[in-house]
Image (cartoon, rainbow, N blue to C red):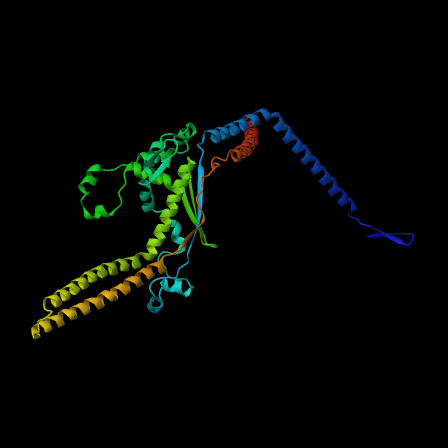
Length: 398
């Protein structure tokens, strides 16, 4: 390193100045080559604009056909807020903790209440097969035809009314699913042979068309719970907005009834049992009362030890019947109060409304996605053809 003194200022001259200059020149040349390559790529894309336009038009046209010919769907929604309940008793909790029944001890140690039907399981109620079996036989109103038909009839009759694009998809992209539906077979002879078998009577039986209708409804009826607010959301999607709203209301009613029936089943059984015993003891009390009155009327002026003994026996029967009758009357009132106390509240936060706007297809989104994919696909085709051409030339030259 050398120093030159000019006007009390030292100028340092680095011996690596020439290498820095060379690096700057290399960077500038690399930038120029990058600009040249970029211009070359843009020029190649411009020359292949017709091919890009064809690919772009194919994608946009396909998206347009899909958006136009896909049947419109309407979504009806509802929101419910169930009551949070703690069903487990202190004695049951102590026994579980003492004996450690499976994974229940871990749940209690984590501070969770032991309930067979927890709120997070409520959405599963309207996703289970019993709900769809119930739904098949429910009737809905069709304003266009001014008639009531079952949900099963609506699904089977409207099943064949597909638009052209849906039919094309069934035998192209959806072909495996279509073939699986055709493979569903039943053995009528076996069903007839087992029709009176006790086990066969306990299982749920559906015909082929009923099975297909249930599987179709599984994709149209959805339910989930927000674990932060414990709000249950139910959504139903059908081509007809009025049908969608009616089925959504059926789902809401079924869920509410199921929850109430589950939590009050034991109390209602107790109430019915006490009610039967109450009416039974009521009849016994009335019979004892009538026998005592008849005996007193028949032996009003007779003085006899035998008569007095019989009257005392009838009086004891009357008192016993009255005490039992009065006790059951109190228990019956307590059972009614218990049923009312254990009946959960399932508040309807957002009622079902008839949708006015379709939920599917979202035509604007489909067209934007088709345009993006069309542009990317067109450019990709150009690059692929260019790469294939270079490879082919190298092979020929070799």
